[in-house]
Length: 256
Ligand SMILES: NC(=O)c1ccc[n+]([C@@H]2O[C@H](COP(=O)([O-])OP(=O)(O)OC[C@H]3O[C@@H](n4cnc5c(N)ncnc54)[C@H](O)[C@@H]3O)[C@@H](O)[C@H]2O)c1
Image (cartoon, rainbow, N blue to C red; front, top):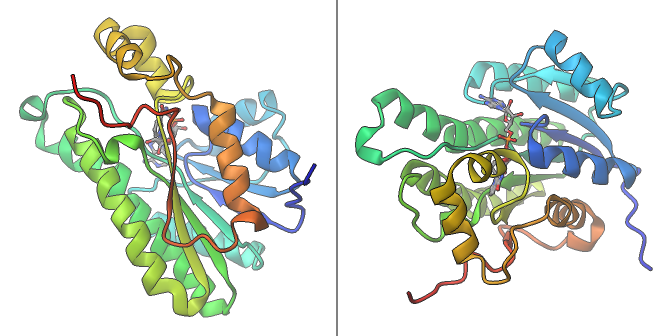
């Protein structure tokens, strides 16, 4: 067995209270990483959640990823406290299903901001810290398999994630001179989080997901968490500008 030891790693995460994040945090924590959590919710609302997940010892900061000022301020504060933070997970994102023509202007803007622009704010804030402190860093975005195949009803989300994957490659190139690597992970339909919520409540979506899953199974959250474990470990030290697709085959092109 090759043990993965992350005891020297401090990892900052956005969207840390979501469905997939729970599994990711537990795996990284088990490997010894010190996790620093951020999410939209105010601290007082989060205390019972942290307690119920056994995370009362983890630092938490409210951070709306769509507010560039808050993102910069929070990231600066976190790096002042933990200057040797080496990994940042831009994980917050998500969508609901709605026809493009029926979406309001705000709905369109909000989805782009949540899934793309906010990731850019986060990349800029952590990138500036690593550059100015002259320390290497690793930024990992969470994308989605639908960045590569269209799906009706989530056009803004798929396009935002596609842009995010290009940003991954472009920033990897641009940040390389500062020894900052940028990668992404692209899950399929996962059995927890927003996709589970829609799967459980929308029979049309459920039937579609079941039909397009070649192995007959959605992603387990454990599989996604293990991919994060790999990406955060020294085993992935030479990955840069890469999007790791972990989708149980759902993204394979199919005829019919
Ligand atoms: N669930 C899936 O099947 C699936 C599939 C592919 C990709 N993904 C991606 O994985 C990531 C997590 O998905 P999930 O389904 O676990 O999400 P989730 O809906 O369970 O959690 C999202 C989290 O983001 C937080 N959040 C909402 N608005 C925010 C904001 N403005 N700023 C900061 N945080 C905010 C929420 O409070 C919540 O804790 C997302 O990037 C999503 O696009 C999910």
